[in-house]
Length: 202
Image (cartoon, rainbow, N blue to C red; front, side, top):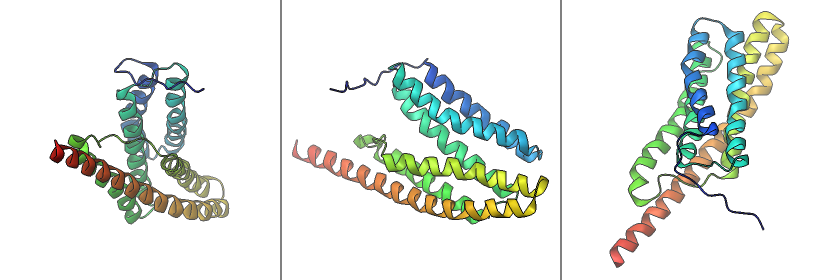
């Protein structure tokens, strides 16, 4: 029988510290991109992606799943994804419409979460396919950056091949990203309706 892990109200945990470090790395990453220091920016991005798995693993292994961590981890993911697509657009790797597609979904979900929070629907259980969509973005965005770097400094043809590999993955991932977003929104609406009916019947 699998033990149910308790969600605590702790603030200072190792997993939360990793998430905070990931948040602090975002302005550094953007500064590196603006300064055209693409290699250290790429390394920092890869490290940030790896820490996305590390903080969750630490929380589960040390039995330190916290309410703050449940907010910080996806929040750090969303901000790093937004920062990365903006950085790629600044470098003319992706068009700005791609930036809008990615960021608009998160903005709508953020607004929806604020509206639904009074009904207990602000924080929803993470779906496995939501994790797949997030992982897809965290995989393909560094691939875009790597494609540009290889195209500029190693081989144009190899960079173009990597870019042709990256774009189908990116499109599929963004479509899944939006599908999951609507799924979360429908779940939140259902919880809000149920809470409203409960209030009306009381």
